[in-house]
Amino acid sequence: MSKKEEEKPARNDGSYALDMENKKMSVTTTTGQHSVLFEDIASTSYNLVKGGPSAELTNPPVLWGAIAAIFLGFIIGGDVAPFLVVGGIIALFFAFTNKEKEWENVTVETRGGKRVTYSVDVGEGKVDMNAIEEARRK
Image (cartoon, rainbow, N blue to C red):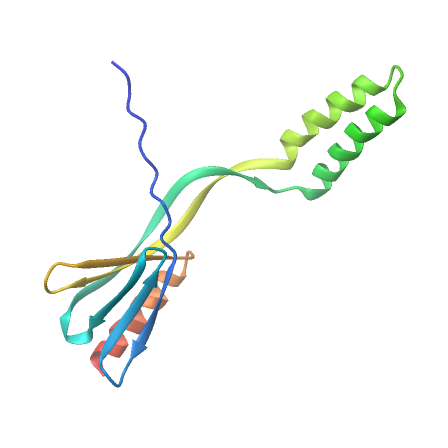
């Protein structure tokens, strides 16, 4: 029996705008724009989401050293060249690390059951949720 690979969630970057005059909020995401009246908001929430890992440059000096070693290996030639090239290739692996991406999803749910979700950086979810709740109360 084969084990199914879990699909990692995708980030849906977005932002919100509060229209106090018309008592509504607009949420703009990568998938479109949504407007919700304050009186129709049933709840707001945020949660931490972990996405799939991706290679990220964490040590730029090692990267430049690896590139220089590979380049010099081809330029210099001779008996030292293979060591420089192989050493440069090995050093490339130390310049990058796999990091799991993290973000927060802010969800606004209406009384009708519609959910509008957008993604923000870690730590911004609570700020957005509190701002929306504060605007609703005014």
